Image (cartoon, rainbow, N blue to C red; front, side, top):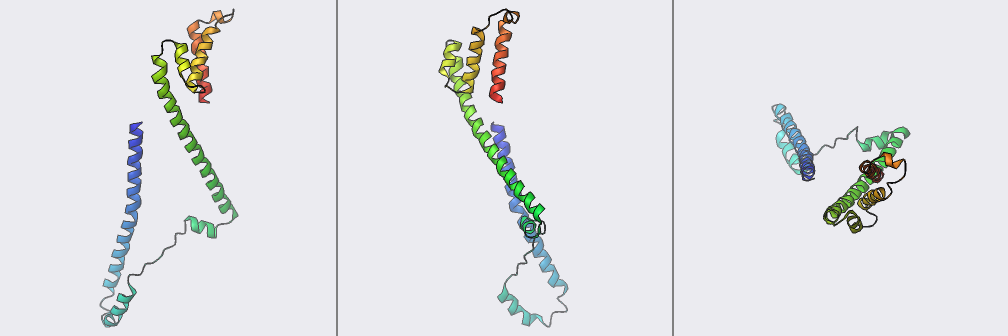
Length: 182
């Protein structure tokens, strides 16, 4: 669990670094291109330089806005009903995916807490029945333990005598685990 968290944290830091560094590199490239352009036309513009210098100082640095022809804004403005419909469907599917992800994480956290509780109480009990009774009602671990207890109590009959007790209990517990996982 700690290695997953460390890997996630490292990936988040790398993504943040890349996101912050990309605009800085773009600004440096545009600044060097802008400074190189006046240097090539400097001999021809020496006569007009004194008059243009005060006007350039007052205007300040001009930023050119470049529209991304592949962005969401361009897609929404220029897209037809198929493109807009696809975008809406993808947003709905994304919201559904995030809902499923968050509910699964909450369920896993809850199950992890119940596993810790079961590990602390069940294995320190005097008997299996006492261990099952110590687990919280409605817990999946309580359901699995109760299934094992019922399997030991109901191992009787002509057909069931063909299967030994250990195999019978193991099969019952496996069915309970499969039911919890589904």
